[in-house]
Length: 90
Ligand SMILES: [Zn+2]
Image (cartoon, rainbow, N blue to C red; front, top):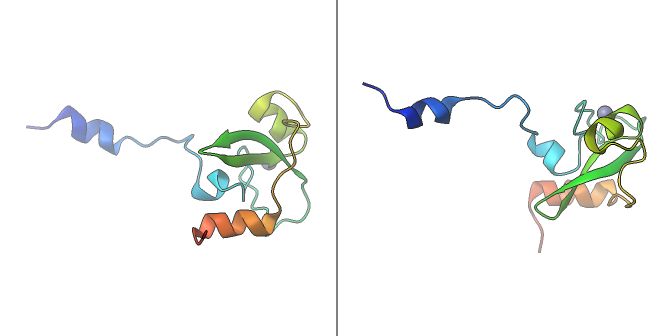
């Protein structure tokens, strides 16, 4: 015998953002890690639980929110995003 709960619980969501994406440390679309890649400019495209979600300026931003420039909002400095990701706030 098996339960429906067990099946749905094991289903994997491919599109689920990683912890880095949710912390604004990686592109929501292509997964570029902004801590390692200095190249792409990150723009704010969405929010999750009060945190900014970022994507690369251009194609990624357009896929994420419909505008190549993202939302009209300034991303937090990388340092602060890293701090929030580690969870040692306050
Ligand atoms: Zn990207």
